[in-house]
Image (cartoon, rainbow, N blue to C red; front, top):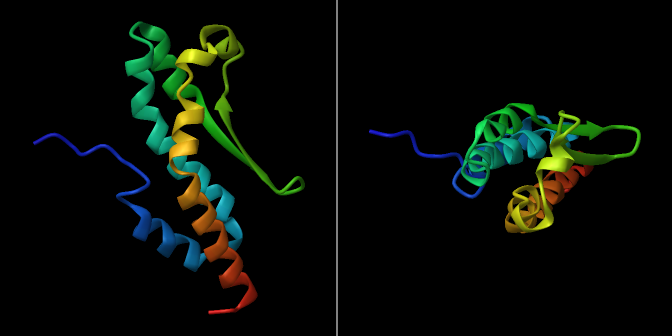
Length: 115
């Protein structure tokens, strides 16, 4: 039986539990789960070897000083390979934006002790 692909919607309860354990790491948890959600999509967007290379170089950076999350590729030629019409990052983030807001709100509630 084939392994079911990871999606943030299906694993939302597990992600909530991780955030309740360590609410200050909310951006790291969201970034890791979004990368796990996007990575299987990349080879379907790019049929040649670039898809495999891009999926391996996909990463996230949760910056403490700026307080934001960046998702992108660690390869210098990724912007040249991708075009606006066939870019997989934005649709995946927009699909999950409501859940991302809920996760951040949950972390803020945990930190503030408003439960």
